[in-house]
Every structure is written in C-alpha cells, then in structure tokens.
Length: 234
Image 1 (cartoon, rainbow, N blue to C red):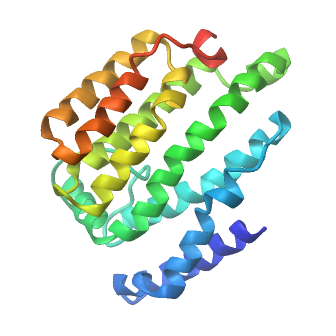
Image 2: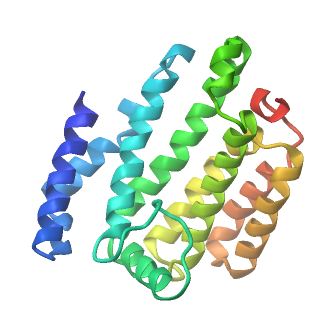
C-alpha cells in the first residue's frame, strides 16, 4: 500500500533527523512529499468504504497518529499522545515543536480530524449490524468510550489551535479543519457532551483573529445542532 510505504519512509527520515538533531532535514522536498503521500485525502479518505472496511480506514488513520506523535516528541521526552495537554516545561516545549513543524503538522492534524469525521458514518452503520460479541469487544465503556474519544480528539485539536501564534499558518489551517469537521463530530456526541466543546469554541472565539471568526462560528453551530447519529443515540 502506497500509504504504508510512505509512512515507513517518513519514519526513517524522522529517525535520521532525530539522530542528527537536525529538524531541518524534515523540511526537504522529499520529506514533505512522503508526508503528503501519508495524508493524501483523495487516496485515503475519499474511497467509498464499506462498513466491513472500517478497520482498514482506522489503520490508515493510525499512520497519521504515529507520525504526529513522533513529531511532537522530537527533542523532548516521551509524550503519551500526539496532542495532549501538558503543564510546565513539557507544554512549552510541545508548543515550540508545533511552531517548528507547522508545515508538517499542517498536513497531519487536519488529516486526523478528517479521519474521525470520515469514520463517523461507518461507525454508525457498523453499530446497526454488529453482533453482541462485536459490541462487547468495545470494552467496558462500550459506545460511551467511542463518544468520549471523539470528544477528546476534537478538544485536543482545538487546544493545539489555540496555542499557536496569532495569524500563523497552522492556526488558520486548524481553524478551517475544526469548522469543516464540526458537524460529523457533533453527530457522534450526546447533547450533554457537546456543551464542553461549545464552551471551548466560544473561548477560542474571544481570542480569534477576525478572519477566523466565521469559521469558528460555523463550528459552534455544528455542535449546537440537535441531530444525533446512531453512536450518539446508543
């Protein structure tokens, strides 16, 4: 699979850059081309996946998680996830890494948001046909775990956006991605789970650049909808 090969190649480039303590190696045209191949939405997210292929799409999205995690780890101690919040020096270092790798994360983080949005209808369909054994395989939290994962991913991306410098390319890119994916994410969440997201979006709106305000308002509207998908209703 082309995406797998691109991910393998990029991880090798990343390992070399880490060994040489040379993040500029990841700015090369070849490195960016490999990363673009990993996050190519036309090849990865656009196909008409059947419900049975949900696992295939999940794996394709996991490649983006792996690379974003490694980039955010560059030059610092291990982090438990790509875009989790951290206090003190770890948070400041994470923000500097996000600034240093704006071009790279500008491909990866919107891709991850789009992955979640693309999976939403497949998850909803899967829930209507899953056997009791398959549903039990979700774990103790069941569908609530899926909803909370969706809520957490959106909130984490929102927080990454808020920490970027005003007017930065990554900030604008994430605002756009957050707006474009707001409705699918909202459809996964029960109404009570949408309120914290709306609150966070409203906080971001108060600090937003004027050009970002319409997109953030679009995202707020997405989480204000009453529409509820199968996962939301479960």
